[in-house]
Image (tube, rainbow, N blue to C red):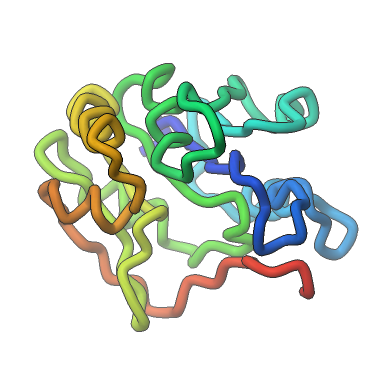
Length: 180
């Protein structure tokens, strides 16, 4: 179960955070990305962080830090594309502001994963399109094609793929605003 690559999406403009680099925003004296990693089980074999700013700082937590291959902060799907391009095998993708993921989230995503589908978390409120597991080689071309055709939405891409949902008992909480 530990032979997976964790992809952390931290490459955004931080529009809802007043322009701050969301993953490095501090909560209780610690960067959000550090909170995520502190609560992550099982631990990954490799960590790739998609970050378009502060790459030197992110290297503290990652085996590899990669920026979008597309200009202008085109969104999390471009970050996932960049991270998949330097990854292989089974990957779990999580947003950097997922401070305390549900305790079984990663295990559940890994347990249901398959090269034939993308495994996506669904909490009691909605599908969580950035909490997913997928095989890099199986889905990189699909994502690149989606982005080449002007797609940007995680929901939009997932609608074009084969998805297996994993039920998560509690709502997944992200910190999307500067006031926390």
